[in-house]
Amino acid sequence: MNRKYELVYVVSPDASDDQVAGLHTQIEETVTRMGGQIEKTDNWGRRKLAYEIGRHKEGTYVLEVINASGELMKELDRRLKVIDYVIRHLAVRVDEHEAVVDRTRTRRTETMRRRRVARGLPPDRQPGEGQRGDSDDDRDDRFDMGVEL
Image (cartoon, one colour):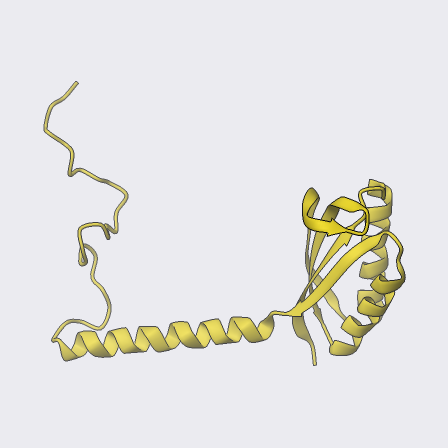
């Protein structure tokens, strides 16, 4: 069963851009060979680490969003552990979190609609309804004094 994972790895600042690209290629080949799919790759570039890891104070961060099985993620974890220029890596399953967020959003919407109906209002907010700071349109004419310049 394929699940959605985010894999973030930090590459040593001593590694060249070609080595980072080669590492991405290795990961991509492993993912496709084992039946997964890379949804998105985002190279965040060289950044300062929050704390020193070994002798490194900087690293190149790369984010990969992968649809894959747990076995594939174990294999990627094993491979990233043995590559010398990978300082740290972390794989997190995110599909479960997204499901929780969707359930919470649905529950809040249903509660809001039920309360509005109990007060005699339509279930959904109407345009222009709400507090002063909650304007639905982008125009703010509260400070328009009618003076043309």
